[in-house]
Length: 85
Image 1 (tube, rainbow, N blue to C red):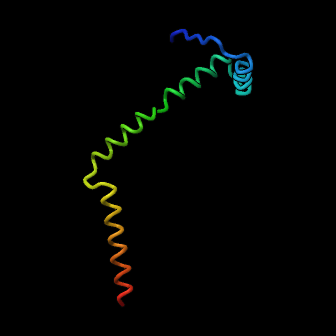
Image 2 (cartoon, rainbow, N blue to C red; image 1 turned 90 degrees about the horizontal axis):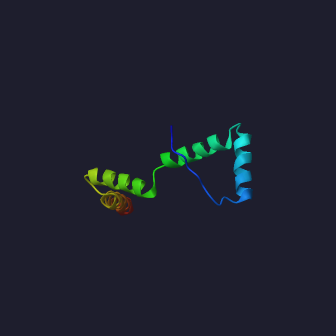
């Protein structure tokens, strides 16, 4: 069994909107809110996403800046070759 969670000071109009959304889905307000909480917890935070991206970048042998530089050099060389014909 999970823990009890209580939220105080929820404005009445917001509570009614949540209750209406739950009813539209055929759920109790409690089930609807548990679903919202579960989805929020499942989403990674910005810090987690950035950390994952940084770990992936560390595994590369060549940086994206170097890749762009190489592509531009190749493109410029091809353009010069065409102009000189």
